[in-house]
Image 1 (cartoon, rainbow, N blue to C red):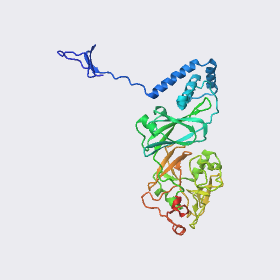
Image 2 (cartoon, rainbow, N blue to C red):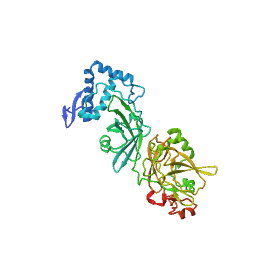
Image 3 (cartoon, one colour):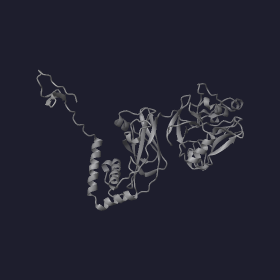
Image 4 (cartoon, rainbow, N blue to C red):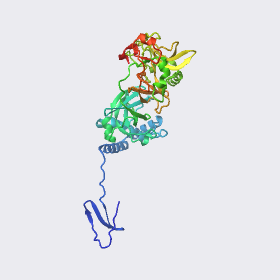
Length: 441
């Protein structure tokens, strides 16, 4: 606050003139700006205050038996606080918090739950993807298991950076969804909270509070830091098939910091998933669009979208459509090229060998070092500008579709084989459409 002391010979003023207060105090004659009026609470703040007042009154008016039920519940089924997993809610805390989430969900139809009801924890986890497309901000949630009795209250933060802790990230409640996979448009809520949308490449925190609709429990899922991505341009179907010469030259194709998945990556993934090859079904896309029946064990739980792109023999003949998914690796063991293998009638994740390097097989790239956490998604931009999505599995960030690159890193075209005859007579780097049909890419 600025004060001005009057010099001798200047007649003092008193009162307020045009918002400036003239007064006498221990400093002498002073003037200062009129104090700002108090900022009134927002509608959301008033609702929160009214709820907590009502909750406190409701707790006081409950029977001793009801209050004891909440305290016993808190002791038998301890539930950690939001900010400190080593501290737990007491009965009063649990009553207030559980009913607050119920209030958010029901609002005008809200009534207090006076007696807690136990439901078995689902130990569920989720992944979230934030996408920005033409000014629309969308959250895409994927749950390891769905349960329609759990309602998830969504929280998002302002634009952040990876080193900022979730507690200081300024998260706000943006609505609720059921515990099932779905996409949610949060554009309007985000703009009302923060004034602008995050840009592509920014980071935001996404948190979910899982709230039982039939019991007294609330589960706090660990918040995840997600990278806001642009929409995937021209999504890949089966990708391209490349010969081994192209694979060896992948350093001339892949962006800096990317390389082919390896023989050893398979062991790392299997150890992470379930320590047995039958877990490969978790990597196969479901349905019969890209696989023929029975598509055994396919769940795509890991969001890797393995599809049966088939392969090209060294004779140029295409085979394996909707039956076989092979992925090149750089390894040669005992003179044989090693490839990942998935089959329509198996839930396994195998290693197979090719005697001839002139086969045509898809390529999946991985990032040599990733900053993303398990289950998070990112993007990869091909040399031809096509944007592909990535996924982190077992700490490995790899493409969640087969590579569909048409150009080398220097911008020159990777030679295309339009037919069987061309494929079997060209021995430099080569690519082809699955079944030589551009519509399959």
